[in-house]
Structure formats: structure tokens, C-alpha cells
Image (cartoon, rainbow, N blue to C red; front, side, top):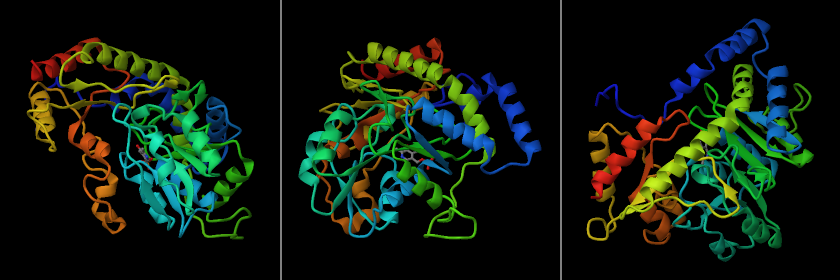
Length: 382
Ligand SMILES: *Cc1c(COP(=O)(O)O)cnc(C)c1O
């Protein structure tokens, strides 16, 4: 379908680039003429700045958020025979890497208002094989890290925070990614801090873990051509590193703009019968990578996504784009059939998949556009 010029996109990365075009072009041209394209001072500079931003001692950049999660699991020695507890309501990469290292994901249901792991259900999922928990700060809203760390510590489990959608979010004044043992970030173009291509990083206060990740991302090698273990090639390009350094300076402003939009959506939509707005926990400051509502109607919905799909069609007819994060929970994915989960087993996640709609959300979204989204939605419920 061809969109009219007045249509409102779900996100708009070109518009943001336009605001910093001169800075970015100059920095990229400098890298091009420097001849240092992989690693080097640009990447080291970004690692230092990103560590400082998150108030951690170590940052190791890599090729993607997926690789960051993979490298984190490898650095902790997690593999065959181990179990890792996580949420089924996330992007597939979170559990793909658990499987890739040979471990088994164990799914715990989510909380209906935050979309995040229901921390009260974690203890029941712990077995002698459990080695780690991966909380995902989904849509940019922090998990209750106080409760989660208490459980992890009492069972001696590692905590790997999936911060892919949450760069800049905090829990009790601590940045996400600085609370567990390792934080994993993605700089994919639609994330809050985004490169112009793939990129990722881990953060930690543990220098041994950081050293391990540095070796693993470089073919298991510390000294060139001497290989201590099987690693991968997962480095950040210098071009991405300079772009990320520039964008990091704007991140707080952009996140504040997202927070303002989220507050306005909340103010305008939370009282509309049939719409459930997302809730931040007390202690959490979210950065709203997505603003995801649930639409439900007892008469019209039930256990299917028909009603939600109808709402999305109505929005599209009014030139309002929306996204579907996520249409199917991970415990019911074809690839995980062997794990033996049944429909109905993790009901909150399954219902969320039928009811969610992610509204347009990016820092440059104008007041007029926000009003148009709100009006189009209200029309569906009148
Ligand atoms: C984007 C994302 C990832 C993967 O990051 P990439 O950089 O795309 O590899 C992992 N987890 C979550 C929750 C994500 O949203």
C-alpha cells in the first residue's frame, strides 16, 4: 500500500539523521580517510564513553545485540546441560543465543501491565541446572531489578540484562545494564541509541568477564594468531563507533522526547475503555523504544487477535502506522516444539500476543501527529 505524504510512520530514522547530518558526515569522512576501519581509537573511544554513560567500569563493543548476548553467555561459561530463565515475550534473539550455546531456555510468564518477566514466578522455575536469568527490559521499560537480583543472589545465578530496547533506562537511579553481571545492548537502527548498520556492546563491572568477551569477539585470541578458544568475529566498525559517539551526546534529549510522548499517550488513552496502556513500575524510568498498548473487548475478542487486527486496519485507513511486537510467544515457536510447551501454559504472554499494538514512537513525532494517532484510536472505541 502506498502511503500518503500525511501518513504517520511507526518510526522515522531519516528525520533524526537530518538533524545531525553535518556532524555525522564529517566524522564518517574522517574515518574513511584514516584507514582505520575496524577497531582502533574510534571504537575504544566509544567503549569508554558508553561505559561512563552507564556508570560501569567496562564496555566491550561488538557486531550486534544478538552477539552481545551470545558473548555474554559464552563468557560466563554457559552451555550444554545448562538452563537459562527468560521471558517468552521478546524478540527471538534473546533465546536464540541460549540455544546457540547449547543451553535450554526456560520460559516464565510476563506481568500483564509491564510486559516484563513476572519476577514472582521465577523461583518456581529454578532447577539444579539453572545457571542464569536473562531479564529483558522490553519496550524500554525496566524490569524490577531489586526483586530479580534478590532471587538471583539467593540461588547464585548470573544475571544478563537484555537492554537492546532500553539504552538510557534506569532502575532506582542505576542505568539498566549496570545492575546485573552483564548488560547487553543493540545499536540496530531503530533502537534508542542507533548506528547506521548493525552494532552492539556488553557492559560490566567485572574486568575478567570483559577480558573474556574481548578474546571471544576476536576469534578466541588475545595475542594475534594464538587462539585460546573457539570464538567468533564480532567487532564494531569504526564508522559505527563515531556515529554512535555523536548520537550518545543526544541520547538524553531524545529519550526525554520519547518520555513526553509516552506521558501524552498515557494521559489521552488510559481512560479510554477497551485500551490498556503500559505501566512503569515505581523505581523505573523507561525510555520507550516502543509505546505498546493492549486492546481488548470481552465481547469482540476472546482468544483471538481478530479484534486487534481490526483496530490496526482502522488506524491504517486513517494513515496511522502501527507495529506488532510480538505476534507469537517464543515458547510456541516451531523451533521450540521439542521443548514441549503447550498453548495455555503461559497465558499472559499468549494473550498479549493477541492484544498488543505498538503506536508510532520516535523523538521527532510532532504534537499534531500524536493527536492524530490518539483521535484515530479513540474513533475505534466510541
Ligand atoms: C533488537 C533486539 C535484540 C537483538 O539486537 P540486534 O542488534 O538486532 O542483534 C535482542 N533482544 C531484544 C529484546 C531486541 O529488541
